[in-house]
Structures are given as structure tokens and as C-alpha cells.
Length: 95
Image (cartoon, rainbow, N blue to C red; front, side):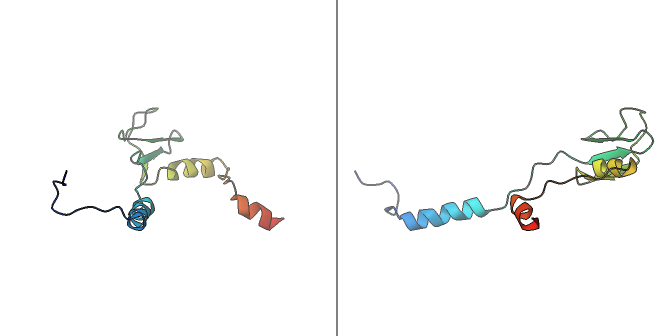
């Protein structure tokens, strides 16, 4: 039975592989949790749509677009610094 399309489609594995590679290499935006807030009065941080501190009820003293910034500020305030795990290749190079 003839195809109902105007052109006949012939499978081309190389073209299909290129199309899949384009789709896989496309950068997708990271999921967003919304803004990150910090209340310096209560030493509290949170993320989401609510801009008022859940502890004292006052507006947040700082707002950040990156979700980890508020947590880093709190850790620095108490004298701790965030510890990042090194990449597996970096551990071997430092030995």
C-alpha cells in the first residue's frame, strides 16, 4: 500500500544518529526551586515563594537567585565553610 505522505521515507541510520546526538547534547535548564531567602535575625534560610521568615514572621533580610547562596552565608556566619567532594580524577593527581 502506498504511503499517504507526499515523500517516501527511507531509513538512514547515520541521519537518525546525528538527530539523536543533537537532542542529547542540547542543554536543558536545571530545575528551579525559586528564590533562596536568608533571615539574619534568626539565622535561618529557606527556598520557595514565601518571602517572610517562618521563625520570626518578618520579611527576609536577603534574597538570592542561586539556591545554595543562603546556606553558604549561614555556614560562613557560624565559622564553617562548605566542603566540596573532589572529582575522582583530582584525588589521584594530588597523591
